[in-house]
Length: 292
Length: 313
Image 1 (cartoon, rainbow over the protein chains, first blue to last red):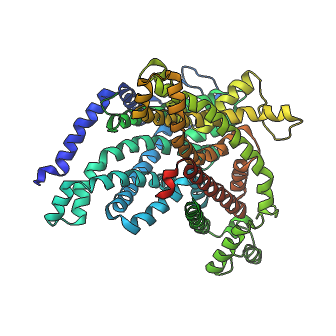
Image 2: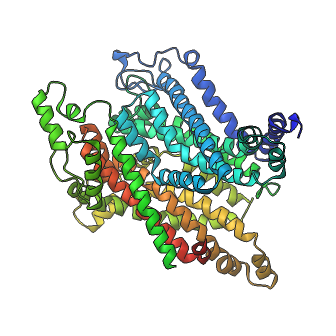
Image 3: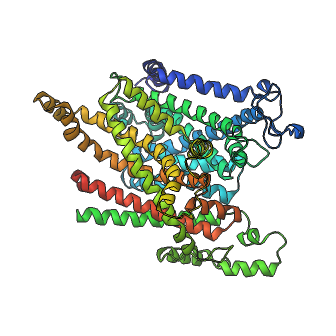
């Protein structure tokens, strides 16, 4: 058990595995490119659109797409393209933060439950199952309704709905890995639980967790937009995709493009993440590997 | 089987207690005083005190908790803070319409999803498989309100085949069904996307089994192999996983009801959110919890019934 068998080697190994996974499934490349395009649009928002997302051009309300307003304006005369681009920032910010938060907390809970086993495992996983069974939208709705909608509260609420899924995902590979010889070897050498978990178990269960992370990012973004559509998103005038659909829905009979553009944005974003995550999952699943 | 049922029932009871406790505390961590929120900033101290007393907020937390639990068990979840109507009665009025929508969506989702998943597995890595896989992935990517709005735009606003609003005041069975179609199809398509994927992977597992190879080797016609040996065994995991997806169905029904302006639990939630009707919200959460726990229990029991191995764990 030299130093090289721990973190560094696991990461290099996963790097190669990741590249193989991408190459074995072309759909994951398409997903990655699409998703990076969404991220680029969000980051480059001020350079893509010269308008301010909150600026109201009262003289040009509800105008169809034109040279000045590439995707048209909404009922307050605000540029839809600018609102879409800045809305992407918010969706990605909340989605990524919530997913990372859930991933870290959930994986720790799951790995600890799997590692220690026994009654501790039973109680923790039963609690996780209860939370998992509860519809994430309803749970998120309850928490945000009580705490009030703000970026922080939304992130916490959405993260909480995803924690049990990560706990489940982290637990089962931990159960397998802890039976392996190198863990026994580590124990014989007198390594503590923290070292065993942190340097030998977590790196080994990382691929499964990260793949689920990309799939769950799609889900957290979907929940955020759904909450915004219900009216529990980040309050106006901040632009959110779900909020744009919510206000556009009132004018759906005369100006359907108000809901069509943000719908398309949400769909592209979530679909790209699903393509990416689904392709990767097929590739790392040992049952399916080599049969694609 | 008896011990299995008793164990499941006990577990459901514990789950119910845990979630009810969770709801109790979530509702009580509200920043600020619910009585003040309902009455507004200008309310007098007397009015707020009276409201607090009426809501039982002046009592110690333990007493409130006990009352809440006892109320939930006998389905007495109090009165609406806004209209004063009993919460149970209001929920009872709209519950059938949500159940009808969910049941229709579930049946339609299975009818579409299971055959597509099996077809996809049998035609693995062929053209049909790719199309079905991409389509189901696309289905998973739709937030329910986005797909609902697109259906509304296409079939109610442009083509005028269905009414734009399903107000619930139908004049007859035909009218009633016409109002149900679009919302049910919306939920069913998303449900079908999930079920297709589960059915496909379940069928792929089965196709790898030795008894399938044996059946083919002894000359059973391919269709009979797939049907008699494959589909029946593949359905076992599909039932369980579909049970788990009912949570997603419930969440999506909220969004669908809002878009189609259809009466139901979803519209009730949004209405009580707007009016800050905390007692109604709490009652709705209790109702959702009971539904979820009941669904889980039924799924577990069905699973134990179909697959005897589960009972002896």
